[in-house]
Image (cartoon, rainbow, N blue to C red; front, side, top):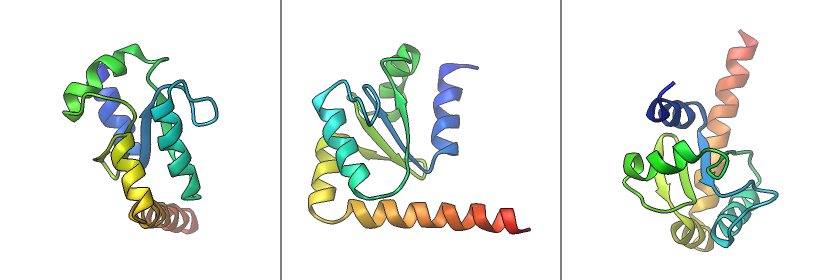
Length: 116
């Protein structure tokens, strides 16, 4: 699969996705650590891609996203932003409802499909 296709698929399949250096438990840079800390504080599950393990994505994503740095938070296929934006949204109380509403929307969708 082409790298760009892989990126599009990851963004499409994960309503809350962060591209970062390292993992939420073992971040490899301060910006990724701060961003995932804010995300984890929202109390919902999210997906992540370690760009250090995926150099192809690390190379291609900035051009696709038109965003040069990592981490990158994507919610419902839209780029929210990087560390500064994530922290600012968190401090202003904007990140929590965005993450909670998105998680709830996808939880109820998967529960409905399980029930049918």
